Amino acid sequence: MRKKICAAAVQFNIALGQVDANLLRAVEGIRKVGERDARLAVLPEMWSTGYDYKHLPELAEQTPRVIEAIKALTAELQMVVVGSLPEKEDGRIYNTAYVIDQGKVIGSYRKLHLFSTMGEDRFLAAGDKTLVVPTSVGRIGVAICYDLRFPELFRKLALEGAEILCLPAEWPKPRQEHWRTLLRARAIENQLFVVATNCCGIQGKLDFFGMSLLIAPRGEVLAEGGESNVELTALFDFEEIVTYRSQIRCYQDRRPEVYGTLP
Image (cartoon, rainbow, N blue to C red; front, side):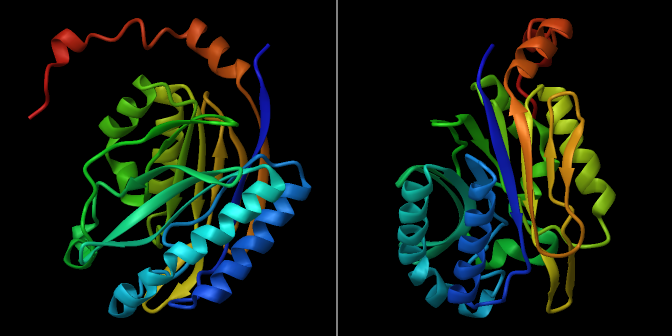
C-alpha cells in the first residue's frame, strides 16, 4: 500500500492590490488546513494581488517577501504550498506558480497560456516550460487557470510522472460548468488526483464563483467549495492511482506513433 495524504484548497476573495491583506488571509487558511492534518495546500491564482494590471510592476516587487513568509510557514507546519504570484524579471511580469516544500522553493512554473480574450497577453509574459516536481507529498504537476483548456499540457505532465495536478485559478462566471467538467476530465483521462483552487467574490466587473475542487483519479469529487471563503480538505490514497491504471490501461494502450506531432 502506498502513501495517503490530506490535501487542501484554500479559497478566498482576493483583495485587489492589497498584498498584506491577502497574505494574512492565505496564512490563516493554510494554518486552518494544517490543523486538519493537510500536507498540501493550493492557493488561488495571483493570490497576493489579483489582476491589478495598473500596479502589477510595483506589486510584483513585493513577491520575494511574500515567498519568504510562505517558506517560513511551510517549514513550521511541514507542508507543501502551491499558488501563483506576479514575478518580475528583466522588465517583464510573469504569472508564476511556486511550489514551496517545508521551507524551500523547489520549483516554479510560469503560466504558458495567457487569456487573450481578456487581454492578459498585453500585460504579462508567457512561460515556456512545464513543471513536474518531486515533493514530500508526491510528484506534483502544475498548471494555471486558462491552461485547463489545453489537455495536451496535462497529458505531458502525467507522462512525466505527476501524481497530483495543482491548478491555481481566477475563473469567473458564467463558465462554472466548463470549470467543473474540464477538471474532472483532466483527472479521469490522466488517472491522477487534482487540486484546483479558484478565488471567489467580485473584482471590478468580474464575479468569481469559487467552486474549488479536489478530485480523485476516477473523477469522483472529494470536496467542492461554494461561492465564499472556505478551506477544503480531502484524503488522497495513492493506491487508487495504481488500481485504476491497472484496471483501465490507458497508458499502455496509447498509440503515439499514430498521433504524431500535432500542428
